[in-house]
Length: 219
Image 1 (tube, rainbow, N blue to C red):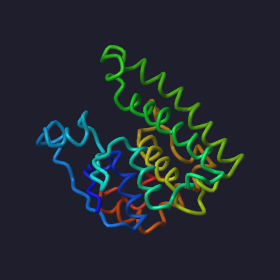
Image 2: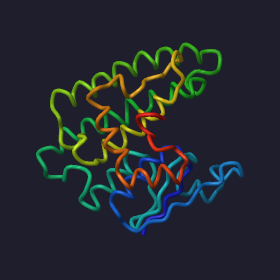
Image 3: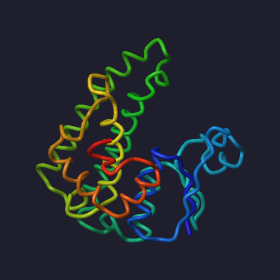
Image 4: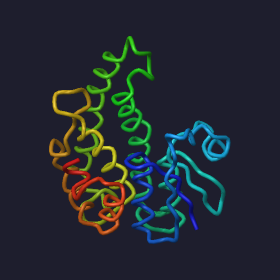
């Protein structure tokens, strides 16, 4: 049994969807952010920085979104290439590309003051926007050229879920503002997001978190 500590429409969203797709026994417990739970000693024992998500597993607590996703997929043998699969190297390369490039750049867009202070926020956001364009274009072009089975509209996957969550947030930024990247601008990625939206697991989690019927293509 897993216990996921989550907050609606945060990075725990991908973990909730993955757990639902795996169909494994788990509980999802909403964090009381307003009461300061993220700073509590109990939560800091799960995540030393007091961030989301954190999950309690049979092997101990885990944090970091990509690490949790990979752990769960490997432990249950679904939604990602197996460790000895010939697709594993390419999958890992692009998973870490996403977790160490796209995800941190997204955080610079949403929280530019954290990088260099409020006085530099506009410059940070503008730089992050330009860099994000490069990153998303690279990912889109790879999918268009290689059509990997681990990032495809044909079947749900760890990577599809992770990328869909990130594009949801970028697509929710109003047009004209730094960071606005609608999924429709990335034709190789859009069908993956659209296919995920038809999945019962995605619909159930989206309904529970109030994300609407099209959480990825129309955030």
